Length: 134
Image (cartoon, rainbow, N blue to C red; front, top):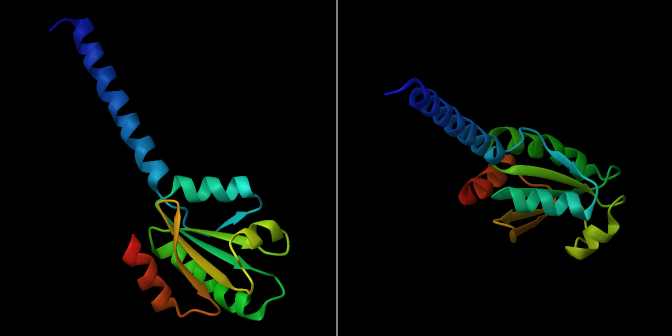
């Protein structure tokens, strides 16, 4: 094997390692909830991840505040991507998904909504639901 062939083999191995690393990094979910402030950000999150839990909330909502540590735990401990949508700042987005009360949680799988939960949720039940689709 010539020196040029050896160098080309090394380059090809490096390219493959980089491809694998990029693939792995793009498939990983953030370990904390991601704030979504527009339809474009919402679409990007739902389209680029397999399982996405969307938390429609309001700052003034007591049950939303109680649910926040549960949602943070789901983001940290599951493969799902968790996004948070402030319904006061994103009324059109909330309306588009029929959010009439907060907190409302929507679970998207492969870009499609599959589950809707309204109100306070227990961590174990929410985790089981998310993991059923992961």
